[in-house]
Image 1 (cartoon, rainbow, N blue to C red):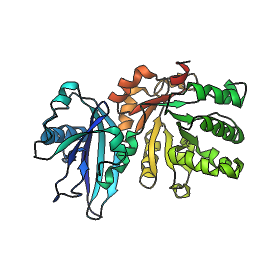
Image 2: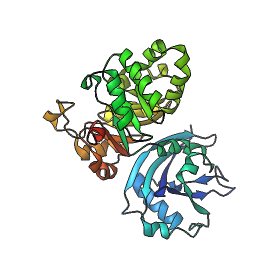
Image 3: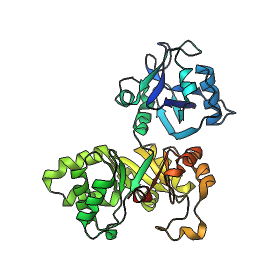
Image 4: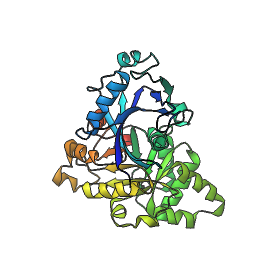
Length: 343
């Protein structure tokens, strides 16, 4: 097998506009657009390589910008293997204004494109970049539902979330009830709110196929195509990955280095969209965390460095923690309280 080439990739954006370069015909994967970046030197960390490559290619100093880690993409081309270390960087108004010349320092064409056109594949990218476009669709916050027993009925649970979840929300449906009730909840909520991107528990899948009427199978396919299947920590650690369908996109819960290593292994063979890394802080929903106080932001940051997929900080966090999450390598936050605080 050929040696892996480590590459730093800068997903540079200003609000909803993203900066792309254009690869010369004689380059590998030529005549395609690309995010700014380049090869990481042996003595560099990915972030150091990122800062250097961005300055060399477009003359932009991002040393003081927050580089939000998205993940690591490993891809085998016919002639080489690459590991793309992907970071999302928001530039200031002044930096954006300084990047309007349409040409980089190496004479390459550069252009700003709207996110909607980018994720709609209007700008052909190298094959290894396809996962980046999927990651760009992830939100800053993922909502997690309360247990069903916090409500008087399934209908009240469905009514609450159908009314309170914001438009196009990503929501981990975790009602902590029987698979039959969970099936009714998913059917009820997504029938009313087709805009929601659901994260469905792995254990609920079998019941969905068994319990849903045949007329709803097409709807189930749509849910799973747009949504994700969640693996809890135990499932991630014990399941034989060869038994997991490659037709689904996965999300998982991780707590330590060992589980992140398992997740990285899963990401080499399946589409993994991200992970909940927890607990950051002590939280009432997990009383045992009050003894340890949670892992804290520093530990989360160290763990995020070894994760190959987007990290969402979970456990006692709120909207006010977003900037801190970014600074410690998370792409966003998740939790029950994100919605409860808004009620």
